[in-house]
View 1: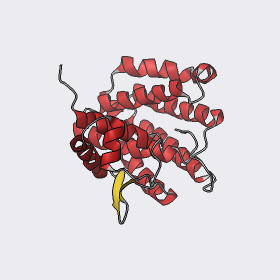
View 2 (view 1 turned 60 degrees about the vertical axis):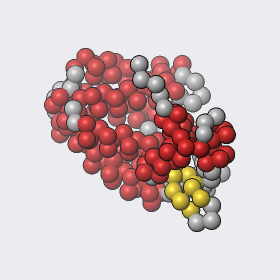
View 3 (view 1 turned 90 degrees about the vertical axis):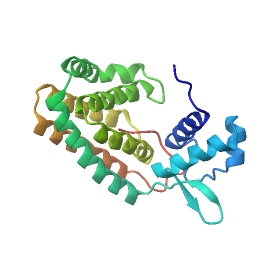
Length: 224
C-alpha cells in the first residue's frame, strides 16, 4: 500500500477547508502558520499551496502573500457556463456507456430523497453523499480520463459557489427530482434527453444562487 505523502495530506486538508469555507475568501495562508497548524514541515505546505494556486483556490495578493481567492457572482456565472458545457457532454456519454446497475441504484435513492432529508443531519451530509455518488457514477460511465479530470477540478469551484445560495429542503427536493430525470434519461440511453435534463438542473441551480441576498453576513450552506 502506498504511503500518503505529507504534501498530499496538506493539500487535501487545505482544499477541504477552502471548499467548505472553514478557510474563507481572503484568508492569508502563511507557510509557517499552516505548517505549525497541520503538523508538517514548510516544504509539504509549500507544495500544497502551489497545487492550490494551480487549482485557482489560492492566489498571490500584493502585500499579503497567498490568500484564499474570492467567489463573486460574476465568477459563478462564468463557472456555470463551463459547467454546462462539460456536464451536458458528460451526460450524453454516460447515456451511451452507462453501467445500468449503478444508475438503477441511484434511481431508487433519488426517488426516496424525501426520506433521506427527513432522517438527515442539519448539514444534509446524507443528501450530499448521494449527489457525490451520482457524480462518481457519471465519471465512471464517461470513460474519458481527460474529461473526468476537468470535471473533478471544476467541482471544487462549484462546491464553493454553492455556498452563495440559500439552502432549503424545497430546493433540495427539486434538485433531487432534477437528478432523477438525468438518471432516468441515462438509463434509457437517451443522450440528448440526459443533456437537456442536466441543462435544466444547472440553470435552476444558477438561478437559485442569483436569487440569494449578496449582502448575507455569513456563507450559507450548500444547495445543489
